[in-house]
Amino acid sequence: MAQKEQAKNPFEGLQLWKVIGVFALVFAVVQISVAGIKDGINFLMNLINANNNVRAFFGSTVSQISMIATIILITTPVIRSVLNKPGVESLYPRLKSWWKDFLVGVGISSAALLIIFLIELALGWINITGLALDGSAPIAWMRTIWVALLFNLTISVMEEVLFHGLLLQGTIEAWDKRGALFISSIIFGGFKIISIGLNSTNWLQFIPLLAFPGVIFGLAYLRTGNLWLATGLNFAWNICQGDILNLTGAHSEDNLFGFITSAKGPKWFVGTPYGIELGAAGILSLILMAVGIWWWTEKNSIQGN
Image 1 (cartoon, rainbow, N blue to C red):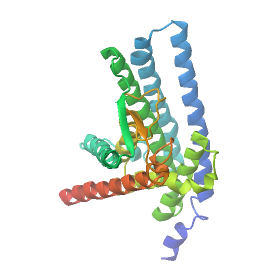
Image 2 (image 1 turned 45 degrees about the vertical axis):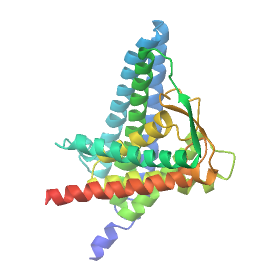
Image 3 (image 1 turned 30 degrees about the vertical axis):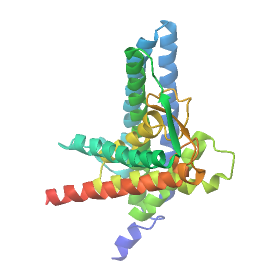
Image 4 (image 1 turned 135 degrees about the vertical axis):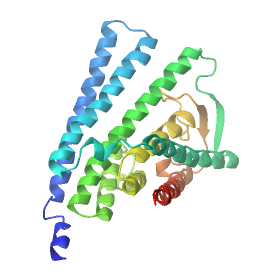
């Protein structure tokens, strides 16, 4: 018993500081590599004077798929060597039902955000003023939707592989599940703060709110042991909130192909132009997602038995 407790001490065995340090290094390498791929493809598109269709259907496809492959190829050797885990199989195992987990994750996030959207619409806290691509040619719709799908898939894979496949999984080995979920979520929230550059107020006030999505996505990983469900949740959270339902009321999103909206509700509920994470709407939708995760994983557990 003493040996088991000692193995879970963050300062023994696979040490916590080592996991976080390795994560920081891998995170930096991934960011540099992804930026290099993006700049390289943009340079190629400019070199051949590619039109919008070539940029969207060829350039973006090659760019985003290369980014996803690079993220996994950089991270999996580290998982094998540092965590002694089976690499890709600990992230996206080849399960027969992998597509069900992914699509259920998409469905859970989409349903939760749609409920919030309808509540705000009924209360007059959000108004629909039009469609982002109203009057555009079908090819313009196809370009925007395709790029939005690729972009949000890449973001969701990157976040899930790094924060849950590497950081959460590693911290569990160094400590325990509760501590690992807390630490990975706080770091996830800190990453969001840095990436969006929130500087209008005390950023420490926002870390718990921005960490909450990390808790829910991490919970999906803990409940399933892989990233399929979590990636579906993350993907739909981003694309539905920003590009389809436009819950923030932002009009300048490059990938917006859904509603043009005007958010008029109280900030404590609707959040800020960054996202609903900074309001009660985000908390409520994430709670609904947690219920959905519990329902799906319990259902699978019963069927598995």
